[in-house]
Length: 125
Image (cartoon, rainbow, N blue to C red):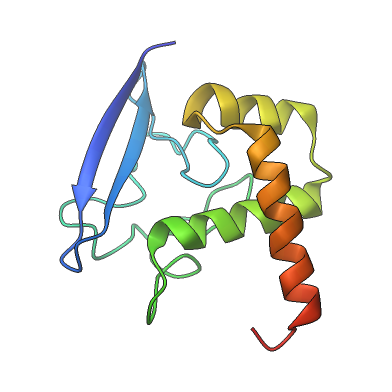
């Protein structure tokens, strides 16, 4: 499948990539669900669309917005872990992540284990 990639650089220097499928639909950077014709972020990447992904329920510009030392990409990863944990790590979801976002699901599982272990050990974080 052919994907169009759009690179955005935020004013804080963070660079991230958004993807569109052949029909022009944007993909959720958390779960790879089609967002139709609305990009989750546009322009300089400072403001999200405020739309909510129907699959993972991420609200762009709100639930994923970075603060302090956080980045959009680190927040997307955290939201991805939480969504997969909640949905039960379904094979179809993992396949979408690999096919559309290029995510290695073996690495993803390993990172998620570390994330949940740290979160459960330090609940205040």
